[in-house]
Length: 176
Image 1: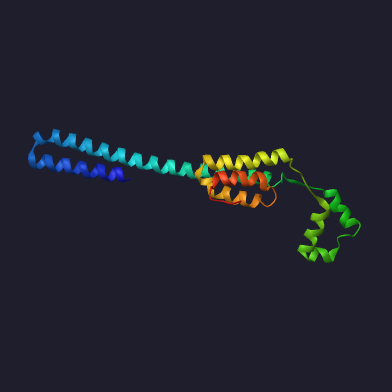
Image 2: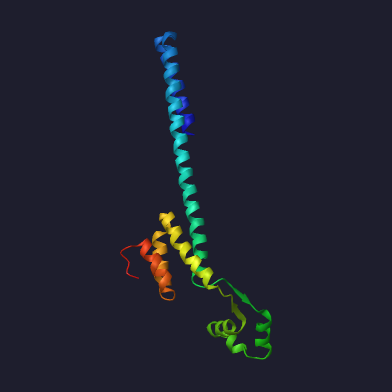
């Protein structure tokens, strides 16, 4: 829309100049019009390109954070869970869970979680590799650095030896 308004403005300017000064000024004015409109077009295109790059970087950062968060689950020895529907049915059939429990969602959730949700374990090697990957990704991507430092501080509570090693790499002032 801006380009159209600028084009109409310069076309009117050319017509007015031709009427006032004659046809001898038409060629220099046309050249000036061409240069100015080309410059404005290039500037507007570069502005749109810059906005597109910024948008793509933001989208890339979001994907990186999402994958980083999944990696954090492995580092915390969580690879997922399975819900046993048969066990839930048995809880209701044997009246271990009754109508009173169904009224209190906290109690119901606790009973089902204890009996019917099976957490899938993560091996030590996979967990250690995930912790190392957290540090390496943070070194490569500045957007992850603060997040990784906080994550490694948390991991220090249950895997201090490996977590402190990478925490010192990321944050040399950190004392583990």
